[in-house]
Amino acid sequence: MLQAGAFANYPSLLMAVDGDIAGVGQGIKAALGRRQREYVHEIAPLADVLDRAAVSERLSASLSAVMASVAVVLIFAALFGMIAYAVSTRRRELAVRPAVGASPGALLTMVVRDAVIVCVTGTLIGLPLALAGVGVLRQRLTWIPEPAADAVLAVIGLLLLISAAASAWPAFQAARTSPGLTLKTDN
Image 1 (tube, rainbow, N blue to C red):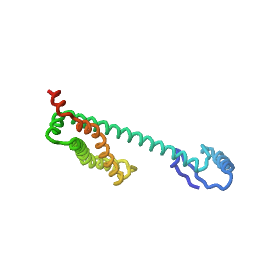
Image 2: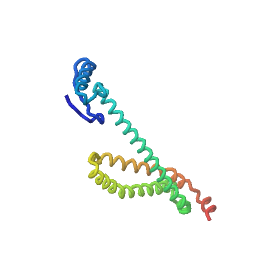
Image 3: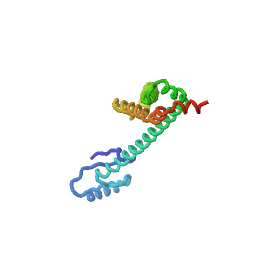
Image 4: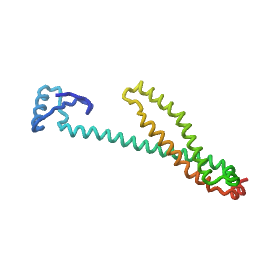
C-alpha cells in the first residue's frame, strides 16, 4: 500500500488488486467508517486516475500552445509594421536605386537583410536578458527547468524565419517601386 498526494488535494491510497476492485473497496470503506475519522471519496482504477491527471497536463499544454501562437502573430505583426514603415520612409531612396542600376532583387535582398539584422540584434540583446530572467525565477521557483539548448536554438530559428516572412511583402513592394512615379508624386 502506498499513500500519495500527487493525484489530488487529499491523500490517495494506491493498491494493486487482483480481482474485483469493488469488493476490496467496500472493505476499505467499512474499515475507515469504523474509525469515524476518514471517509472514502472515490474508488477507481489507477488507469482512470492517471487519465484524469493527464487531462490537466493536456489542457496546460494546449493553453501554452495557444499563447505561443498569439505571441508569434504579435511578433509578426510588429515586425511587419516596423519594416513597412521603414520602407515607406525610404521610398525616395528605394526609387532612386533602380534608376542608378540596382536590380529589383537587390532591393528585395536589402530590405530582407535589414529586417534580419534588426531581428539578430534584438535576439543578441534579448537572449541574455531572458536567460538571466529564467535564472532569477529558478532561484525563487524551484520547479522551473533549465532552458534546453535545442529549444533556445529553435526559438532563434523561428524568430529569424518570422523576420524574413514579415519583411517579404514590404521587400516585394520596394522591389516593385517605379522610380519615375515615386519621384513625380513625392514632394
